[in-house]
Length: 469
Image (cartoon, rainbow, N blue to C red; front, side, top):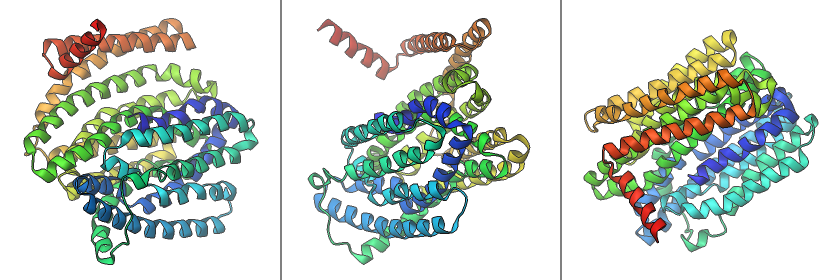
């Protein structure tokens, strides 16, 4: 979870400074160049984040098979990454607007060649990736405060972010020899991996259409200023989403291993536990962020970003739907190789999003993209629920989530009252966070105690034992 949050939270920490120094238009310029570069990275990675993680988890107990699987998947990845990097250089050479920033983003595109985080996730060596990436990410933050001092320093910001990503990926190669030995790849084995990689690439591409294409569409159909607003609003919502996706990242290799051994009883037990706690967290974050958004945006980024408040609130609606679908996807569909059903859900989401974006962005600017994103995430969640309705107790999961929905509503009431009484100030925001967080925590503790939740009671017991010691 620390690793996943780190990728988002450190740039988020610098965003108040960057927003004031660079301004909304420059921020939109960066977001546009990054979003275009991201698509080249996306094609470089294919579906390796999910497929590589799953396949490594399945063979991690057999050293010989682990070496063979990693080597063949990796060389397939290198082949496509090199092609995409060459194509990106060609793209940069023919564009005129924003060419400098696009050229700098080449380091980010090239970094995809060296991305082997999927291997460490597959063998569940999460701490190793956390340690090395933490050092690089913190160095990034320091460089931003030292070198980015004026609106004309946008190119420096681009260099720091793109080169930082490259160094982060390279750092993971240092300890690799302790866990796997790279072998000469087999052409026939490499071909065997290409098909599944493309199958899992299509959902990744579809998801990107409503994660990154909306930014490109805002920049093209509206303005870079509106894109700057949307960029910051999305950063605020990416933190809770990253926390939630961390559960899926950690559980996927475990669930893939259980699927490979046919242990369905244990798999469903983990699903039940995960769903309850993920939805508990999702509603806390959704109502919490939505409740403080109007105060948070101007306090954190400055008065020029007041419009971000509505965008943050709108995007927070997606959090419970994304959380519910994340558990189903990462802990059931992908481990069970139900890739077609996963693919169907995200394609439907992408079609919904692109359709609404093309209609609403020219009329409503960034708000149109928010509406499109909400509709897309709801669609993806409903389709995934539909395809597993006869295999998983989804109605039971839904009923178990309702108390947390109620707690979120109750928590939001004092947040609104505090804002109305104190106005837009830093102390208002701090009081909202303290009151809302404490209230939701108390309600959840009472609920878990009354329902005799085994995980919660066991955790409390362990804490008590440590205190007494």
